[in-house]
Length: 259
Image (cartoon, rainbow, N blue to C red; front, top):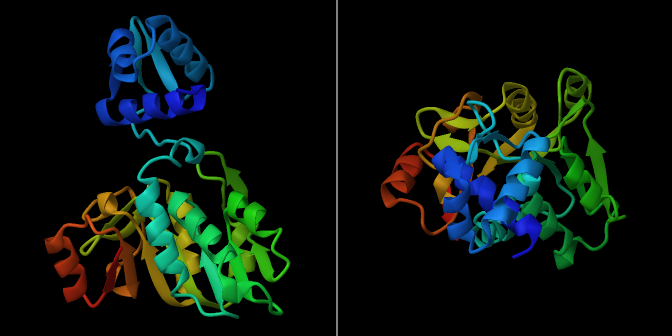
């Protein structure tokens, strides 16, 4: 197992359990205790966890994995969701993409669509996510618009009032939201209130809103609301979604696509 894969696994275990012992982690990952100690020390230097005697605990109360450590989680589900979302976008449309692992996969799915290889532009993409803008900027047929703002290290998203000036002057055909939680009663939500505020602006500028969320996000709540559920036209999720949750979304007037 590579170091990066090991670090992702360790951080995911910490998120699930809140605390890990060296020996416990070594047994889980089938590596030596010395390797785990080095990993814990190096992750602590990056402020990714807090080192304790004999182990580690999550860093802070509202722990959130940075984007680069989330990419392997539910990867196949996110890729299927992304392809389905990309098919909802018509050539020539203006698309808003929030940050996140699922929306990054949506950007990649759009980039390889055969009917979007040419045009002037083939697609206009508005995003506050630096990594998405970086991936799509090499596609000359796409017009890429990046909001202003201050970069948030965890998600590579630009946040803050500087984005308001850009978003206040545009119109979108569709906004694609990556969320940490989506619930019929409480709506779509994120961990960070500044991130949620920019995502909310993207929704307000769009004719239609699509939530791209794997089944683990459904029925969940998070600190900062992006928008109420009734503003969402379509939810694209994976086939493991709870049928009762799907029914509730459909009863609320939301089209649900499962893949």
